[in-house]
Length: 577
Image 1 (tube, rainbow, N blue to C red):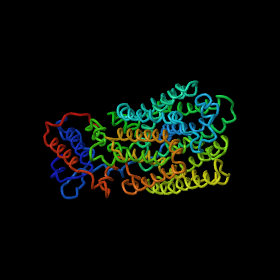
Image 2: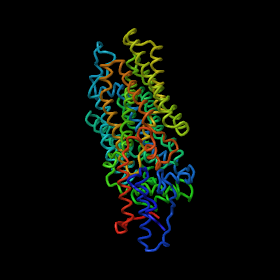
Image 3: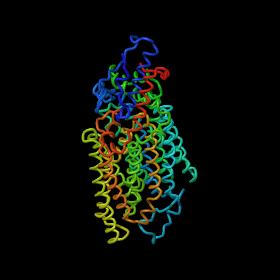
Image 4: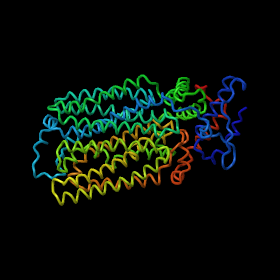
């Protein structure tokens, strides 16, 4: 027999991060009795025996059930992860292919012929300082920034699977437009369409992977997205290098068009898969969600994990506008991290180096083929280093990898700037092989550190820290901010290189220092913490815990208590069995 008064005492003095979800859960259990008119027809499935600090009994948080999760790492999860992570491959392919294609004379002759007639007096840092060229490179990310916001709505309304499929269709259309271009306008339109697809895919795939994975393997599985991104970059760089022997327009058309293959695999494969159980529960598909959860966990006993999803969905049901909710003070940590992690990732300078690596190596005084070969070496280091993240992200944790990677990136960036400054000052436009090898080593040192830290974890952490009621909006913000900063830095990098010269690497190094301080002070460790429990980490954090206002939680708690005590205020609603 439920006694609501036993659950809530002096709500104005209560501050507990599960208050809202648990009051809704108690209310829904009360409805089972009210709707049937008998206490015997529906027995509560969960018992609450948690004693709250400060006196009074309170409902247990979902944390009390995480040790009851069952299941194994099944092939269904592996297949779903591989297919979805192909979205990372097409994203990486576009990053890797762009800089190489821009060094092909046939591509320059068709779209940017003035780049073939550069004055010998032009500074070595300014060879590719062209606003229209930079617009071509970065236009994809401007389109992606806006489509990611649309993805935040579509993942909540229609599910993660639907959003990935639509993104794949846009990517296929953009690939066709680009690879068949004969005019600059069509080339840029195709790149914008690609951007729409990339924005949708990058918004939905990390969320989908986090929700499909068993919580103890969530980090490693989510890093699959970054691994496929690095593989896409490497394969694109390898194709670019091989295409140097192909005459005419076919070299860049093949480089741009081959990416349609993984995009087709992702689109068709995702269409044949089911949505994540969390996405189904969020849309009210309770029976389908429980059945799918049982399949991907490989066992029938999934009640504890399923009930935690339902708890979060009940809280989500009370949130009509996740965009308005994420602006509340109680979600301040999630909002700050959703904005800062992707912004910092791009302020490290990684995509500027990935976009323009062939031009950077060509600037060192080596030919196009040698520059592309150096880029392939850098891409191979990128792929290999990502396996470090897969192996250790759930062992050492997120913060340890971010801090170690940040320190290594700082050393590499400041050293690269120093070597370039000293080398060009001493030898002029063409560096000796030993100096060029030193630059290649330092850039690879930077890339390796990024690949096992800020590369995968800037996508993983934002998917983990959002509660279900703000998850779609939070990931949309993360993806949009990532693409906006990629656009701004991609648009400005060649101009920055021309104006700041070797100092541009030290500029990025300064930002990595700021990033590392942010991680050390404001980022909680989410290793092996179930998604439904992460919100509690902020309540216990030594900084966030002091900044969060419990008044919002207390008001919702008191309102829920009043609703329970007044039977007539309980409106009928669908209840998960």
